[in-house]
Amino acid sequence: MEPGIFIKQPWEQRKLEFDFTDTLATGDTLASVSGVTVWEGTTDKSATMVSGAPTLSGNSVFAVIIAGTEGTSYWIRVRAITTNGDLVEDDLRLLVRNVGG
Image (cartoon, rainbow, N blue to C red; front, side, top):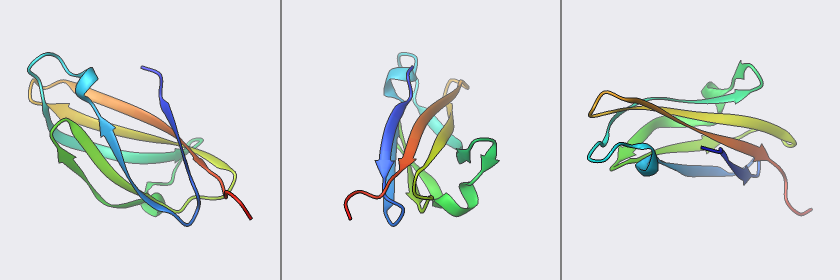
């Protein structure tokens, strides 16, 4: 699956949804979240960019993403475990940009 792109401004705090419905086998559901990480290249920025613990609702994982440096690209990686024991992952490209003046 091709990763999506999300743009936020440095000041924004955004709750993002990662919907795994199309990834799951028929009848399978998400059982738990293994983790949410934010990467700038090979540097883990999760400690300063993920606020609180991710939550699980149905086949979606929600994570609050904060901060970021203007003009920087990040990768957000969400890993979850299904009731069938499958390990699934979703990735999102995060661009931090100031919009306007």
